Image 1 (cartoon, rainbow, N blue to C red):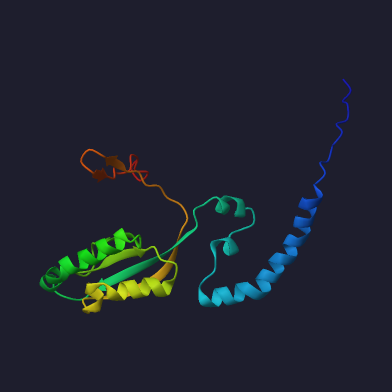
Image 2 (image 1 turned 45 degrees about the vertical axis):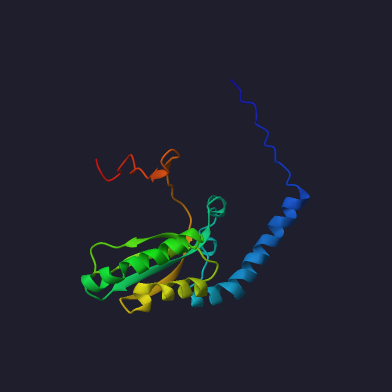
Length: 179
């Protein structure tokens, strides 16, 4: 039985797409030459700049929300920490109500008073000012390191009961580590 040759057809790119693909290598080269060295030096390299080719589409759909993480190291007694806990919690609730606090809480397994706070601010300087006003830090009960964090992926589920104004966050359904 004789085979009939298959004719290959090529699709034409639109003129806008052609122009975009012609300009893209030049823009990437300019970015690599000018911006990347400065960003590497400052530690502010965006995820898109270090992603392998083809990942841009995947990364483009992610939330890409800039937040600031404060890692606090405690160095005081439990009694001293407890004495100032009401003031600290009142401050955290105030930030929460102002929309400046994404999440916060104590860390287990370290020193007494270790904690993690994630600020929802526009700048590192603003997050630093908020951290410095935290009573635990202001009184010298904790030292703090603040770093920029880019939230890319994740999921949260909540149940809000309107009748009693309660809210719950259920644990994950599946533990992939359990076989």
